[in-house]
Every structure is written in C-alpha cells, then in structure tokens.
Image 1 (cartoon, one colour):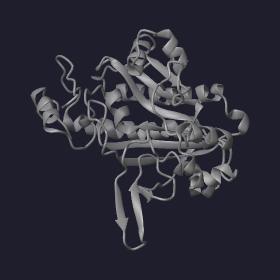
Image 2 (cartoon, helix red, strand yellow):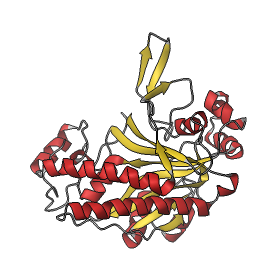
Image 3 (cartoon, one colour):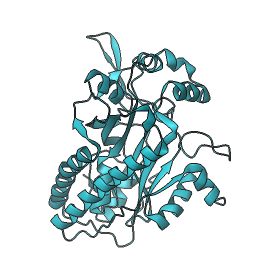
Image 4 (cartoon, one colour):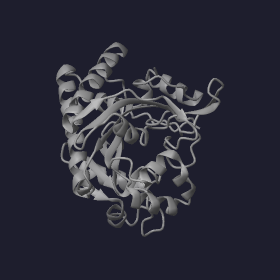
Length: 336
C-alpha cells in the first residue's frame, strides 16, 4: 500500500526543465560549500564491495544488500548500503592527516526500503569523513561540526533562492541540539520517535538529535543504528522542519566513529561479536585506523527540501508502486 501523502493544493514549484537546472545548481554549489566548511577533498568511491570484507553498512541489521557473483575473481559482491566504513579505511590508504577529510558521491540500492514521500530504493548521498584527534571525541565537537553542515546547507539554499526567485523555502541556521533521552523525557506521552521529532522540529525548525542506537530508559532505542561505525554516545541526525509536508525532515546521519572501546561494547550490545574477526573490524581493534567523524547527506533529500517538492520522485529517477504512480499523476506531480 502506498504511503504517499499529497499536500492539499500542491503544485510542483518549478517546471521539469527548471527543476533539472535547480538540481544541478544545488549539487554543484553544496559540495563546494561543504568541502570548504569541513576541509574536505573529493575522492572516488566504490559502488560495491566484497561480501566478506566487513565494509558494507549493515544499517538496522535487517536490510538485505543486493548481491551478485563475480566469476572472474570467485567472490560475491554487495552493492553498498553506504560508505560509512569504507571512508575510514580510505582516509588511511590515501594518507590524509588530522583536520582533513574526504567526500564522495555514494549511490546505493536499498531494496527493502518502505516507499513514501521521502524514501526510495535508490539512495544518493554525499558521504564524507574527516580525521580527528582523540580529544575531539566529544559532543561539543559533534555539535560544532553539525552546525557547520547546517550553515553550508543554508548558504546553498540562500543562493538557490536568488537564482530561482519563485522559490520561497526558508531554512533556519539556529540549530537546537538535544539527546534522544532528553527528547523522550520532554514528550512522555509520545511513544513514537518520529512523533517526538515532529513535535520538537515544529517548534525549533532545525535540530541535531543526538545519541541514537542505544536503548533509552523506556527500554527501546530511539532508532536503529549499526554498532560498528557511529559511537552511539557521540552521533546524531540533522533534521529540518519541512513546511511543505508539515513534518520533521532528516537530511543527514552523522557521528564520531567508534574507537576500540566503543566498538567492543556496541558489538556486544548488538549480539554480533563475530564481526570483530572481519578485516575492517580487526584493523580498527588493533589501532590501525584513524579516529574520525563522518556522515551522509542525502542529495535527493536536499534537493527536495530546497526546491520545496512534495515527493522525492520529483528530483530522482527510481521505481514506484502503481498506487504511488496513480496518486502522483492525479495530483499533477511528475515522477522522473
């Protein structure tokens, strides 16, 4: 069943042609703003990795990667879910130093995704990663980095508005930072994490929701997070209030990455200690990988937010169920 919601009276903000121009403008300008804000350099990245490398992102642990055999090398390949682990290894192999980082275009297929206005089986992100010092592994450093990302988003959005005066999207630079436990305590009558996010973002408009993955006092985590890249005590999601859809709108998942101690603890909590034997995890536990902070920023999500689109299919090419196609056609929404 389609979960697509069509806002009352919605019409696409731009023509198909101008939408493509706006997408080009956003992608060109934002990656420059982001690289300048965080001192990043662009690198090439893989579309797939070997299934036994431990480099693929396990997301919530239930999503199935797209797998295929490679007869020429006798291995199974997996299309990446994200590059959360690969980037950390790349920083070592490419000889980056503390204070410097990389970004890259990440394209993924998430075949088990539940489709709605925000979610597609096709994922496109700017994945970024930066080497930090051990003393930088703090919530203060996380918040400062998230604020730099928010500022880069707002800079690009402001320039887009000047380039396309008919757009009227206004994004707030005033980022409120709150932990998931504080959020649960603030809204005790809202048991659903997304409802708590909606309530908070409706008031604050831009937020960093921190410490995602571990169980809250209610006994449930705010949301799922793989145990082997973000440190659950030092991570967060950047969200904006989406006026068009009337809801909280996640743009980025980011965090200080696990060190040796937090990796062991989180693998144990998740019941997957066997991952410690995989090549990537062994390198990390042996102190062979740099300490880093990193994240992913949805390219289509960002375009959707800045242009003011109601459905992610307006800014990316994907496949949709028949009910979604019919609903969008009836509302005059062109799906690419």
